[in-house]
Length: 192
Image 1 (cartoon, rainbow, N blue to C red):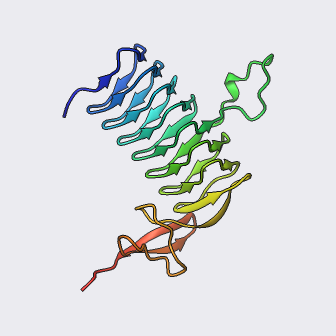
Image 2: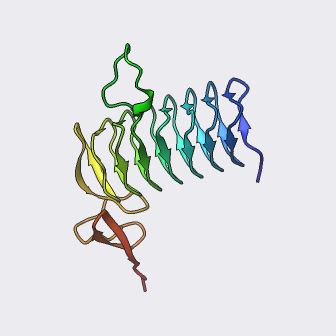
């Protein structure tokens, strides 16, 4: 494992924890009391924190701000210019820092370019948020959602491929089953 790479134009405040093999690129700002896991990539012009937790293997593309109240679990992908909000009723002249609503993006989820994630929602593990979607409510595990407001149009496997009605991943052969919070991995199909 290598120490993190921090580009000379990036600012990493005191009180942060940056994991091994993480790469922090041009004009990034990581604010205090923030944890960024190992093997992450923070693209150009990313802002994270304060008091944010980012898991291992997370990729945050250019021009994304991850505000206080947002948690990104392991292996999350944030597409370019996706947006996280942190207050439901913002006003420039009203201080609402005590009203930050928590947002959690579960393991392996993908957020497409220019998507907006309204605060107070949870995106289930391995869910896929389409480019430009506006997420206003919780997204089930493995759901494929698009539009404004975002609505489920299908399911995806862990590898990101869309599943047919048999819920078998065409790439890996993994078999999924419906559960209370979306899909769960049932078994891996053994090819002969």
